Length: 137
Image 1 (cartoon, helix red, strand yellow):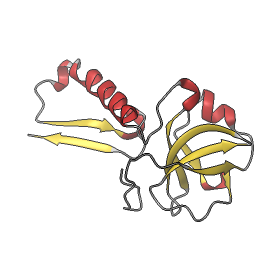
Image 2: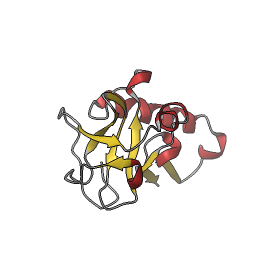
Image 3: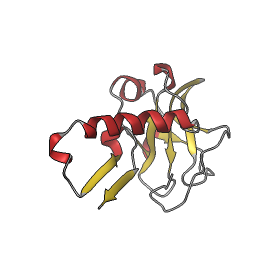
């Protein structure tokens, strides 16, 4: 995955570093599924590498996983919510499930069938904030 600062995070089985919420905004994260966490929503944790997958935590509860960018006001772009049974972003099942859902939605769209260019993954619209994949030709 490529972070907005241009650095790469390699998907593997590494344990996610934690970022801590500064206040209780669990409703925004869990119910509303807002795809971003701004820098002011977090406290501490300034030594996390750009592009790292982080666990967003309130007290001892992991609420979501996301991509961390220390140089952006959009500090974490949320990717998955473990309470809904979604796989961890380091698990290839996570990526495959989202890619298959996006492909299924686009394959049923008559307007896209004869197109010479297609956006296969559309960031927040496909629950993959910051990730865009286009196909041409």
